[in-house]
Amino acid sequence: LTRHARFPGSARHNYRPWNPTPDPEVGDFLTRPPVGARRFEPGHVSYLGYCAVHEGLRFIRETGVETLAAHSSRLAGRVAEGLDPERYETTSPDPGSSPIVAFRFDPELDLIPRLVENRIVVSVGRGSLRVSPAWFSDEGDVDHLVQVLNA
Image 1 (cartoon, rainbow, N blue to C red):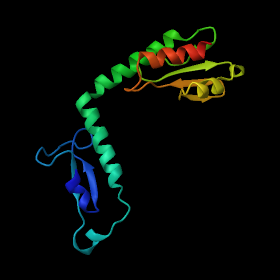
Image 2 (spheres, rainbow, N blue to C red):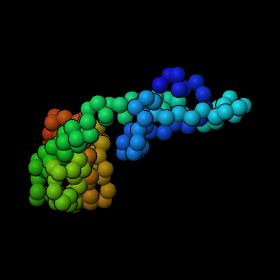
Image 3 (spheres, rainbow, N blue to C red):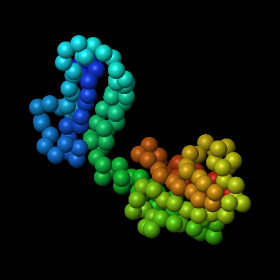
Image 4 (cartoon, rainbow, N blue to C red):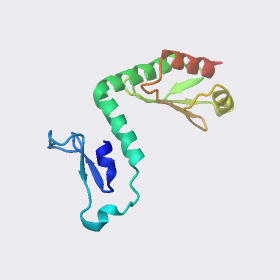
């Protein structure tokens, strides 16, 4: 990727589903440097952003979308199974089939201070909670979340 970072220009994905006919000779990204004097204008290209996205997409491709989704869905199901059903109503249609699971709860529970104190980041609104465990979450993280929410 470094050789592509020497000039401003544009980059497009060279793999499915973003490109229906990827060119195997080119690599992951198609780059188009401007011609003439415009190639020396810095513009607003985020080369650091390109590098981060490139590595992130490479990680996803090497690990596999199915593997990532299965891991996150399994953990989301574990959250749904662990929460006290008397206090949390699952609003997701089929917990464990998606990497996101949502709940309703009594707003009087005042969960935000407990979550902040335990350094837990989830989406909380007035009376609603959405949890979306990711690849870097594990069973210990989920068990800790469930313990804090059920306390």
